[in-house]
Image 1 (cartoon, helix red, strand yellow):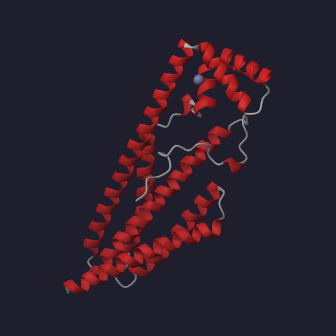
Image 2 (cartoon, helix red, strand yellow):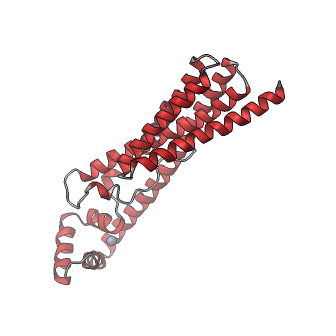
Image 3 (cartoon, protein in one colour):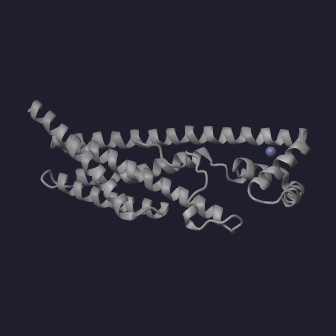
Amino acid sequence: MTSSATGTPAPRPFPQMGEHAGEPHSDSLGDKLNSLRAAVLGANDGIVSTAGLVMGVAGATADRQVILIAGLAGLVAGALSMAVGEYVSVSTQRDTERALIAKETRELSEEPEDELAELAELYRQKGLSQGLARQVAVELTAHDALRSHLDIELGIDPDQLTNPWHAAWASMISFTAGALLPLLTITLFSPDLRVVVTLAAVGLALAGTGFLSARIGGAPVRPAVRRVVIGGVLAMAVTYAIGSLIGLGIA
Ligand SMILES: [Zn+2]
């Protein structure tokens, strides 16, 4: 199970989507795409881990109730583990960002001249002439010194700090949504159909998540779909084989 993407600091989401500095709404679009990508990854995790689990159990036994209990336990454990992981990772990231904001605020009040020079230097490094960089720094400092420093020095938007609870809920819900698919196909179909139907449904669903995550990230679609489908089918094949071997040993 991998932790989904909301927790990892995304430096600049999707530059290939045509994001330009100062373009209106580009940041909120990037945020929406980041949430969508996290949801797709969470669903993908739910599908693969639950499919592997229930296939393994189905390899060992035809008992529907046993498969259902194992699958449900896997779903709940996975969803909670995703939520806790996401909460911890986003909380840590937010604490770090808050500490940086506090540090920058203190520096601005204690050494405003140094901070002005620092801002001007950063704009000079970006390609502005010394005089213009100084002028930009002076005007930005007059407008909103803290926000300007956070933006160019640290890449932090103080209004956009990720909420750990939102991240936790989102990954829990997307994992559960993904996990429900193999759980339903393996328990609703008859013993002679359940493995084939689950294999087909999971393969199709993974093709969908592979397609979506490639499109969101601007990556080529075919290799992404191939990787995620092959990975998922392999996971199911391995657990089913192990389950079958154990089932034979028990019988
Ligand atoms: Zn600064």
